[in-house]
Amino acid sequence: MPTTSPSSLLRSIPQSLGRLLRTRLGKIVAVLVLAVFGWLVYQAVAWPDVARLRLSNPTTTAFIERYRDRRRAAGESDRVSWQWVPARAISPNLKRAVVAAEDLEFFTHAGFSASEARAALRKAITEWEAPRGASTITQQLAKNLWLSPSRNPLRKLKEAILTRQLERSLGKDRILEIYLNVVEFGRGIYGAEAAARHYFGKSAAWLTESEAAQLAASLPRPSSWHPGVESRSYRRYVADIERRMGRAEFLRRRVGDPMRVLEPVEEEGPEVIDSTLDSIPVTQTPESMGPVPR
Image 1 (cartoon, rainbow, N blue to C red):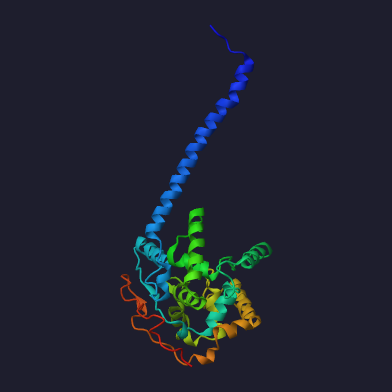
Image 2: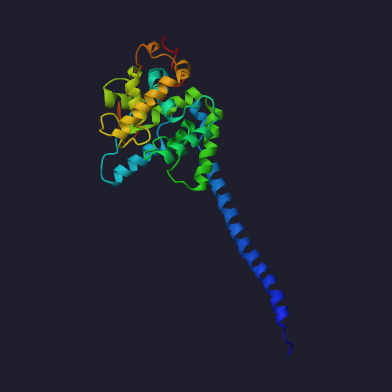
C-alpha cells in the first residue's frame, strides 16, 4: 500500500485550503451579487418618480405613514394636522431660520455638505447636547418622503441617489418649499402651516423671527422640542438659531424680505386631514400659483 510522506501532506494542505476558501468565497460572492441584483430590480420597479415633484405636490410621506401606522397599532386615531401652502405663503423668517439651523450651505452645495458633517462631529465631541445633524435639507427631504429610519448600507445608498436626483430635478426653492410643507414640527403636526396655526394661532406667512426660530429648533426632536415646552436645551438652541440668523445676512437677500409677504394664501381643504388623506390640498402647482405677491 502506498504511503504519503509528511512533507507531501504539508504541501497538500494549502492547496486544499485554497480550494475550500475559493468555494466558500465564491458562494458568498454569488449570494451577495444576487442580493444586490434583486434589490436593484425591486428598486427599478418601485423607485420614486422624483421629477414628478416639479409640478405635483406629494400626497403623503414615509414619515407620515409610519406615524399613522404606529397610532393605528396602538388603537389610537391616525389623524394628522397637515395643510399644504405654496412657498410664497411661508414667511421668509421661517425659511431663514430653517436654513440657518439645518443646512447653512443649502443654496450652494449639490446635496451633500462635508462642512455640516464636520460641524456635527465637533458638536457631538464638545457638548452633551448635539441637536445639529449632518444631513442636508435635501437628504432630509429624501428620507422624509420615501425612506425608513434604517441605517443599513443599501438604504444609505438609496438616500444618496435620491438626494442627487432631487438636486438635479428640482431647484433649491422647490426643494425648500416641499421640505417646509412635509417636515414634522410635533406629534402629528406636519408642515409650516399646520405648525404655525397649532403653536401660534396664525398663518405661516406671518411668523416672526422669534417664532420661526422656535419652529426651526424643534426639527431635531419634534416630539419633545417645540414651542411651549420647558427645556433649557431647547431654549439654548432657539437662541443659537437666532444668532445664526443674525450672522447669515445673505439668507435675507436669498429668501426675501418678510415685509413683502402681504397676506397668507388660503388653500382649499381641511386643516386637519383625516385618515384617508383624500382631502389633502395638493392640486396647486407652480404654474397655477400665479405671481408672487408684492
